Length: 390
Image (cartoon, rainbow, N blue to C red; front, side, top):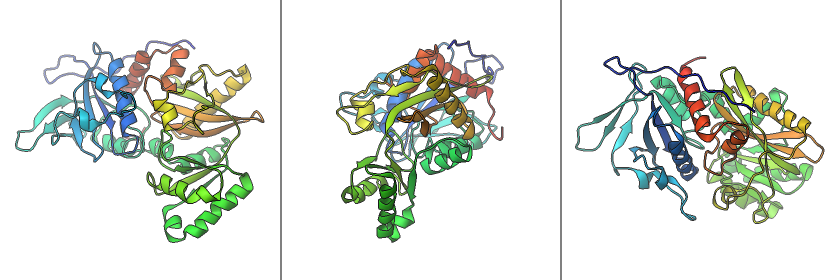
C-alpha cells in the first residue's frame, strides 16, 4: 500500500501573532490495570514524534488519578526485564499536579505544587491520549477534552465507550450485520445477588457451545483478567479474577481457528485498512495473554499468510467495524478465521498498543507507513478535526 504525505494541520499562532509549532500533550498512565502498558506505549510515541515539527509536553496520570508533570525521557518508560514502568517513578514531583482548562477559549495548561505559585506551561494544541482501558480509552478523557475544546487523537466519546465495552461493541456489530461469536454477559447485580443463578447461566452456555470458555472483564484490554476455563469447577475463581478488573463480566465461547488482526487508519478520504497480521499459537501460554504480548514478546506474522480473497475480506470487515462504531483516527480490529473459512470479529481497540512489538504499527510499516509517519498522520488528522458534534 502506498502512502502519501499528510496535509499540514492548522498552524497555531503565539500571542504575538508569529507562527509556532503545534504543541502536543502526550497523556499516559492512568487508573486502569493497563497503566504500565500505557507508559510503555507513550515512550515509543515520544521517541517517534518529530521534534522539528512539534513541541511536546509529557503528562502522566498516576494510578490514583493525579495528573503529573513528567520528564521527556522515553528511555525510562520501557519494560526493563520483567519490571514494568509507572508514572509515579517518572513524575517530577510527588505532589505537583497538572491542570487542563475546561474553558474552550483557553488551552493553557497550568502546573501547581503545594505552597508554590502556579506555573503556566503554555497552550496545548492537540492531545495524544496514550491511555488504555477505563478512565482514558473509554470516552471519559475524550469527554473532558470535548469540554475543554482541545483536539485529540483517536475516537470520540461514543466510539471510545463502545470500543471499551465488549458487550455493547458486540451489540453494535450485530446490528450492522457483522459476524460475532457466542457470548454471555454477567452483570454486577446478577453475580452479587444470586451467584448460583448466574453460574447456572454460564454452565448452560457451556453446555450449548462447549468447554473451554473464556471469562473476561467486559471493559478491559491487554488480556488482563482473562481466564481460560476448562470446566465448572474453575468457574468461580475465573469470574472473581475478571471482577477484580471490572464488575461486569463477559463469557465467550472458544472459537477454533486462526487469530487475525487488521489495522485501520483514517486518511483524508476516509478509513483504509492495513495488511493483516496473524498471531500464531504461543506454546508456552494457554492463549495470547498479557505476558505473551508484552513480556515474552510473542511474534506475529506480518503480513498474514492469507489468500487474496481472505485478505480483502478481513480488510473490508475491519473498515466496516470502524464505521459501525463511528470511530476516528485509528483502530485495530481482531478476528478469528474459523476452520469453516468464515471470519468472526472478536473486538476492536480504539487505542491499540504502540509498543515496539505492537501489531498495529507493524502492520502499517508493512503497508508502507513508517512508525514516525503513522504518529504524524494521527496528529495531523486530530489537528484538522474540530471538537464538538461532527
